[in-house]
Image (tube, rainbow, N blue to C red; front, side, top):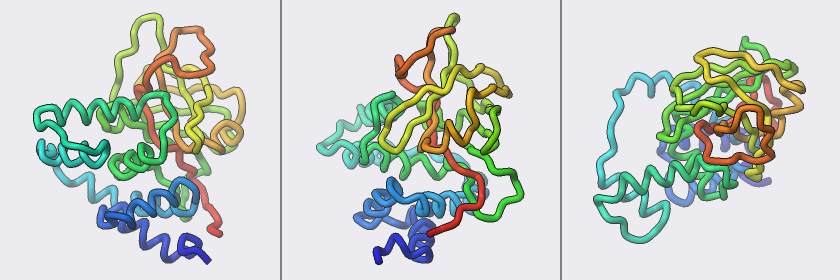
Length: 246
């Protein structure tokens, strides 16, 4: 039996992954498992739930140019020019939010760098109703939008944490993104602090295969088959209900 079929082993690795102590080849192997095995993602979500309150008490720290250089070098290889590191890193984040399907490296970096602040709850012992939950980031990696919907419901609730500029004649448009990086349209979403949107089908039908949720800006009244530009919000889609681990 493979190690990732052992719940205790996966749980221990998930804890180290969220804490940031899982490094090197072991971290890369674990990230590859996250892409394929729901149990590993659920363990990461559980540890995120436990540790997030501690992270929220820490003051924000701006990374030094040297840290940004090392991130750029590890992400892209080669030597980075010190003065260009912040702008290159921001460009990478913007490319990550683009509608181009993310490969394993991009998704792994996204999960390793941003998930500790973004991952939704997906625990086994919850008093909340069964729901789909997404915590979406803005282009600068900050929490921007919280989305939730009852598992068998047909209403989507949105809470805006950080607004983005939506030009006149345009609207936010919600997409689901599956594990292969394929985006599928859900529908327009209002740019409001709190809003509820009617869904054409139940959440279970629309979000069961969603690994991520994202929003782009589209013309009002349009019915796009694919995003016309970069995503302005993007984040993981979590399942908030008791999951039987296999």
